[in-house]
Amino acid sequence: MFRPLFSRILGGFFLLLLLCVLSISLMQHWSVDSRVVYFRRKTTLFSDDGIRASRAAEAARERDIEIAATVEEQEQFLSYMRSGGFIEQHDALRSAVRLAQVTNRTIVAPPLRLGNATNWIEIPWSRVLNFGSVFQEFGIRVVDYDYSSMHKDVFQVETGRRARSPKFGHQLTWMARIKQFFHVQEIPNTTGRALEPARLHHIDELMVIDHRYVRFGSLSYQTFRQDLGLTPDQLALYQALQTRLFLEPTEITPLVRAANAVITTLGGPGRYSGMSVHLDQYITSLASATDPVEDMVLDFFSGLPINQAVSAAMPINATSRLYHVLKQQQQGPLPADDNLLKACIEYKNQRDPLFPVFYLMSDTDISKPLRKFFPCVFSKVHIPNDEKNLIVEDLDDYITYRGINTTSEDIIGLLDPIVDLMIAGRGYSHVEFPPTAKSTFVSLLQHNVSSALTVTADVSSPEDTI
Image 1 (cartoon, rainbow, N blue to C red):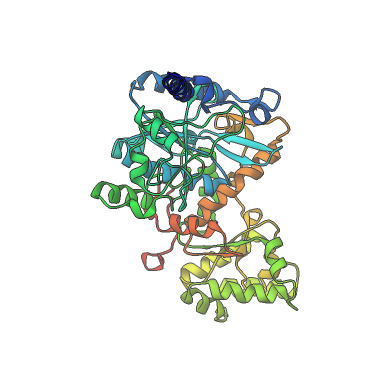
Image 2 (tube, rainbow, N blue to C red):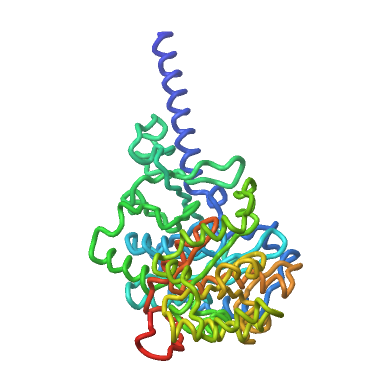
């Protein structure tokens, strides 16, 4: 009699323990407070004490209200954590577009953030790229991330070769099997120590997630690269992204105007080449060189297309205007940049269509030593066109938030590199030392012959067009 009673007590204890485990699991699944908060406003970066909103913030909010009114109950969303500068964030958004097509989700795009912890600005991507174009052609909806929307839960995922979550393809533990039987989905929470996000290996694992909000820790154009581009629709989107969609920031009119001013002054698209130098990094790599400038010139020659390198090595025609301008430079004071630029463009148009005219992008103006080897090197300060200069007042409608200590000069300094990218992207070629992701981005733009950034080329005859 004692043994049956003991067995009943022991059985009841295990049954009670099982019910407690299931209750805790279900409470974790149903409790809103235990989940990751989507669109949570970080006090350290986005508190009212650390930001100053422009009038564009209110306009963006009104657009979001109109968009939210059209959102269906069952619409699912995909977002990502931003990182890096303009090129990296641009790359992440383009990757999200490809994933959104496959998963039939709406992209929630974090705003473009430029700068550092103290001096920074934020611009909604809808003010940078044309969201309507990708929606009209492929039905992919993109909306701006809204800091005022809170308490929406998100399922955090990461991509990687080594899975750390038992959700996909791994042998399940007994606790995971119980949760799976009762359809309990384990979601990371913000209380206590954060749980690891689910690791995804293939696009199929992303497609089976039915959670309404999915956010990647990071994205790049290489994400699920081998799983995309397998259907005609995916190939069509890929071709569009490589040639005409979501490439240049054509929605920021002041940047387009500044880039067009420089491109026109340099002779038009394809009539010049880009030259990018990160001087501090480059000098460090040449610390042991006896003549760093000479080594840099040799590197530039090796990076030029062979036809331009041959043309640059040839002597200047003695009857040309450029020859006389350079001769004057040797005998007396330096010629005005305007005169030298006109002489270079004239020589390219009338004498040698492959003669290199360089647009220099560098943290330090090194055009003077470079002109000993490449006479036609010009940076933005040498361009005699006032429209090249950005005006902060014209940009206020695009910037929603900025650091409280961010000055007008800081804003210009943060946006000028994007203008340089647009200018380099319309050139004939581009060399960069040391090479970075900028070279890949510029190469993509240079292949985009039908870009929205169009300028009439200033050429003397059709034969001179490159």
